[in-house]
Image (tube, rainbow, N blue to C red; front, top):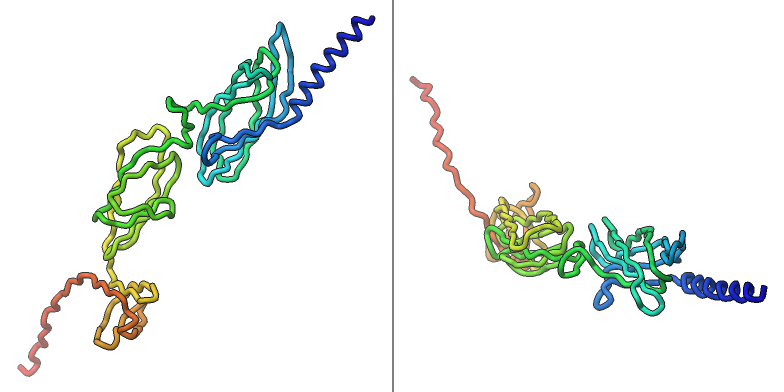
Length: 270
């Protein structure tokens, strides 16, 4: 009877210690250095069964996108370690279509040769260990004509042609050049995109004159007249006159002047 009480006490201590360790969530940031992209919170390890030294566990993992980019897909190998940092199990954690600030709860089940006390995350999507969602693909961005100002996802990056490393996911390219209509195009970068690709965007010519005022206002209009004192333009069918000193720059589009044929009236006196 005394031996039974001691054994029960030992078993109770082991279980109590394990339960205490499991009640504390394990929070991991990925990557562990630099700006984090994902936050993984591992909940309580729950033992489902055990047999011949093997244990079956389940747990809930909450994954949060702490970056400003959408994550179409990311995959990790989860290594389970015992209190001596010995690996006793591994499993796979995957998340899909996770927007900035969004969370998803993923259940994990695994077989372990011991009692898990901590975890490690290792990205597993490609040889360099970068999840697909963080993988970048080199692109050459070209405009016709060249020398257009380029914005990628609202951020000005330079002039075309431009070499960019774009993350997997959706992007927007904006082009602008004096004398041409501004334009934009969506770009979808897929995980299996081959490097060295290019995208070409043709800017449309303006059909209106452009008048830039000194306060930064841009007018797309028809310039009707100019003098040393003032300029008269037509905007949306309305004539407007501006003081010459308010005007910073005028760009006139090329217009084709079509000569109308001379119309002669028939001689009715005959």
